Image (cartoon, rainbow, N blue to C red; front, side, top):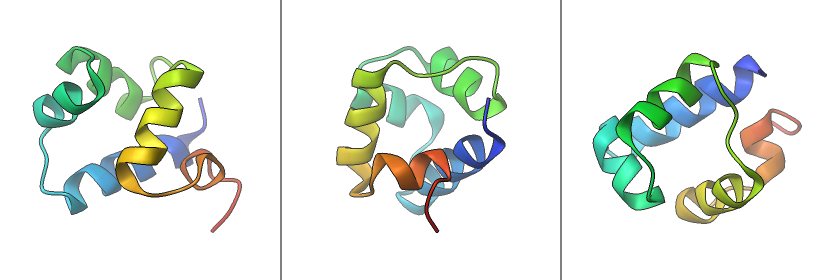
Length: 68
């Protein structure tokens, strides 16, 4: 898993003032799933990646570390 994704997800979550539970509720996943994403232990589905990008107002490329 791309470590840039893990770092950016956590950074964006904290900028919004959300805990893992809060983000999990927004994305309709379990808290443990958000934790696994941030630790790089599993990857989100495309639909969840799109939901994250929309929620945070960033591009998928940004989340994935393909753009600054």
